Image (cartoon, rainbow, N blue to C red; front, side):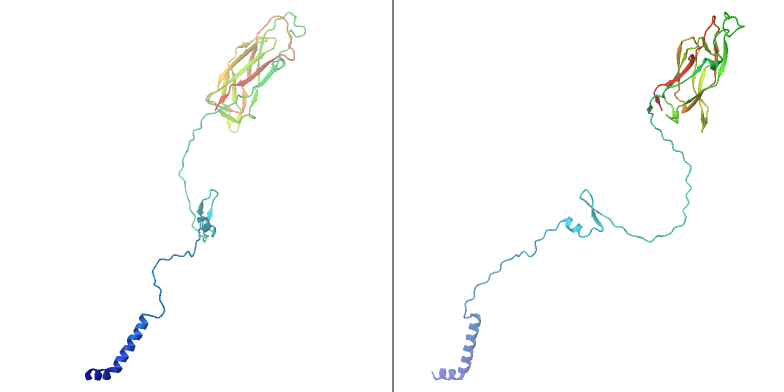
Length: 264
């Protein structure tokens, strides 16, 4: 008993200090006010909600990115450089020849053209002549040469390289005598530039009685026809006849040229 009392007396201060320390620790771990429990949970807050389109971005800078008429976009950039001189470049191309084949096509028929000669052009007048030639003297016939006639189609074409086509010559005789053609009638080019007098058609006629008409056709396929043409001189003969006749001013020998449609 005495031992216990002495022990407490000897260690009373330490016991008190220890008790106070324990009480203070109890207060720290167990605060006087109640503390609610805590929990960990994910929390998401929307800070920005913005939608941007490609058009929004492209419209910010139209200097290089542009929009075309179809709604698409294209990039265009122009850089200005400094001019740089170069030495002269000489090129000597090699001689070459190119040939292009074009398909044929058809042109309308050449418009008809006509010319004629009155009896006076041949020196042909009424028969018989005044006395002393007897009135019952037969007409002895005769012959003459007439200069060629120009035919101008230049208002319709400069030239034609004919693949298929033909020309027709029609002759009508209203003179009171039979007319004979001593040689064929030739139709030639009459081009000065380039110079060309090539024969393009030949028409063969024999004779025409009074009031008679004849037509002959000449093929011009493969011919190069200029717009300006001319006939050769005409060599004509007149057959003898009995009895008197009168050459009226309208009596003549008429030539008419026509054509089919031309393929060139």
